[in-house]
Length: 164
Image (cartoon, rainbow, N blue to C red; front, side, top):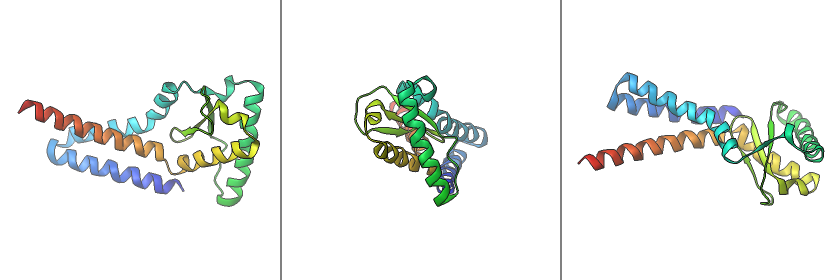
């Protein structure tokens, strides 16, 4: 499952390297590619901080129990259907009342809004499983790498435009 996400990210980073190498040379191409990859990886923690996500360890007993029960249910289903182990999944709560909202932040972090926890167990599992699909496909990491790519190109074009 993760292979699809890894391949997408690798292709984008290789293309970034090739373009940067063509126009800037080896060292700048390596630096740019590493910067994009680091942003894709570390952006998970930046996003969690930006959204003020609360770790499962700091939640009330009720909220912690709801999330752990949903994660255990999903662990069994995922293991049975795909053989993957999701026990490493880190769960967070976003202090927001947006109902049925959640976010996959990267390689292993998922957050749900507080309002999701007021729903029944099946809904909590459904929301988590949807976000889990984003984690499996590494969508958040891919999106950050693409964003860094576009932001760099826009800044470069903007800088070139202003110097003319």
